[in-house]
Amino acid sequence: MKNAQYIIFLGGLLAIVGALLAGKQADKDAAIAQSRIDSISSTVQKINNETTGGDSFPFLNIDVYNEGKEIEFKLYNYGKIKLNDVTMEISDGAKGSIEGLMTAANVEDELEKYTTTKFYNILYPNQSIRITDFKIDDSIKDICLTIHFKFGNKHLIELILFHDYKNPALRRGYVKIEDGTKTYLHYTIDKDFNRTYIVGFNI
Image (cartoon, rainbow, N blue to C red; front, side, top):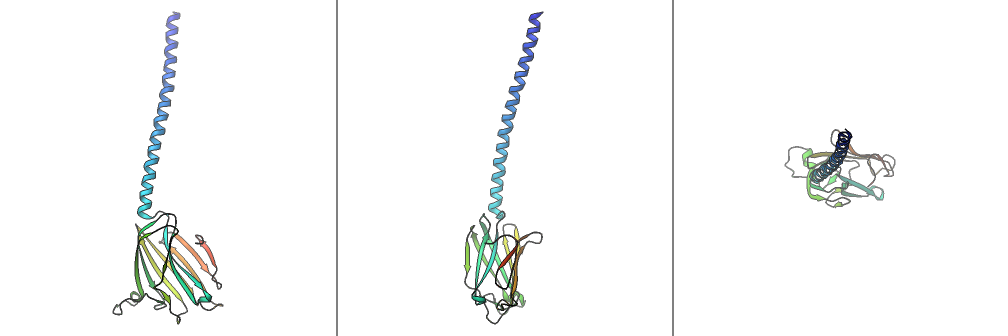
């Protein structure tokens, strides 16, 4: 009788030990599976970032110097991931304020006359490209640009408005980049050319 009880006890103990070992193995298998899932997710995210640019986006910056007498155009990659195959289409809403945007004179659409397109194979993070073939017409007091950026599966629109930029008492401006649902960058410019960032941060 005692032997039978002992055998039953031993069998129960072995069952418990087996269950514990099985549980540890299951935990180990689950950890390995999760590690593989995390690795696959990381790879997919990396591929997606390389294709779409992730959270990075292009940005045409205008710096004004010497009380509005000097203006510099620079194209930036605003982010930590490189951007591939970036198309930048610039339209001059003031129709002639930016020299270098004029296309063929026989174009029927008036606004299209003041539009130009540039293409960049790669924009690296922290890279800036100075655009030297644009300059401001001295006879124009307002800067009004609409820039369409297309890269990956994204289409962003940047608006640059600078009113009476040579007049210290009246000049004001703003820059805004959005895609119709999200604002990526937005800041205002005061009479002293200082920027107040509403969305985003200073470059």
